[in-house]
Length: 118
Image (cartoon, rainbow, N blue to C red; front, side, top):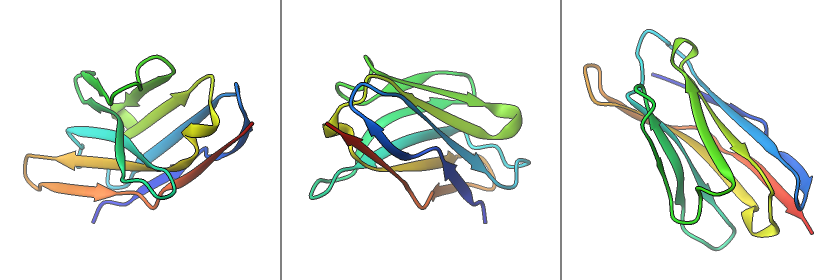
């Protein structure tokens, strides 16, 4: 089973920045698509951004202006750079990894908390 280890969350003041990292174990099984989702208290989980091994990115609504996703295929690691953070960005950020070729998988990380104070 592939495990996703997230890091980089924390408490930051409004206007600050954070970089989240998510490393997938078993790097011999490359995830075709890796991404980040977030869930604010009382809300459903929503897409932040995804990125393929080829570097094709897809952002959720209103996520492109302050957030940047990137990945290091050699390390099977995906990053999410959060800039100009706002209190409404507070939530748990989850990493996701999907592989469509054999062996296929769809795994989630345990989540990392991001709290933005005003």
